[in-house]
Length: 301
Image 1 (cartoon, rainbow, N blue to C red):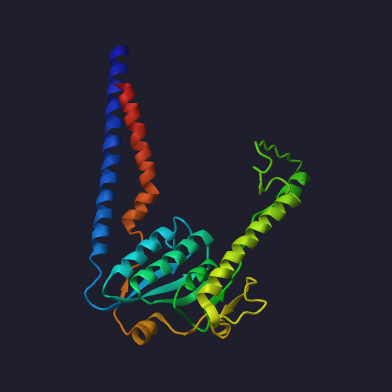
Image 2 (cartoon, helix red, strand yellow):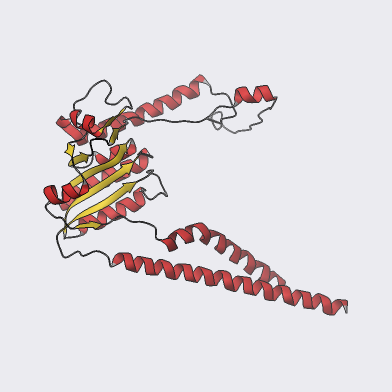
């Protein structure tokens, strides 16, 4: 009886694992099918034969893995520039900034594509084009803003917290072991030395100078430099025009109609569809669970 009971339990466990594996792979198949459908739908939305204004939206934080990442934006830019119907490319910006690395990649690619395809690029700022977003905007031939847009913030920062004083009050001892005297650099639970502070400041100053050089190259003689221009301050759209950080007031529709002379606007922005977001969120977990279930099932055999 015990032997029969043991084998029955084992058989039931095997069947249960097989069903779990089946459903996990079935869900994965459904998600992949949805991705394929979304890609095919996106691919069929553009009328490349008619003259139009190509728009690419730069929204939110500029960072790797975000919607405003170099990977997605560069892909969209290449598609827009290569489209024979696109009369110009408009960067529709609404971003507080982000990674200088990502912004630098995008800025360089815009300049490269402009030189190859000889198409004008215009930046249209909605709410804000600050910091890394302005880094990208200066690659455009002209920058259009709303009078109340936020523009500028030409600076670099590195932030964090230090808890050493609080730890002393609580009687907590930090035990950090490293190989390399600077491996614990910027650890929030360890005191910061003057040498480390000076090193970080030197690095920030260097990146700031890179930012300044890009702005000067992009704006040229239009820039009316003041002591505050590169201080990290930001200005309204109206002030930005007066300082040469922007060119004139104008919206996306205005630029398409009056500047590009192609009122038909085609959006080339690459966005994750619903299926892609589901896969990113659940795909890794499903795949890991399926592999673990397969291993467990194989081990029972």
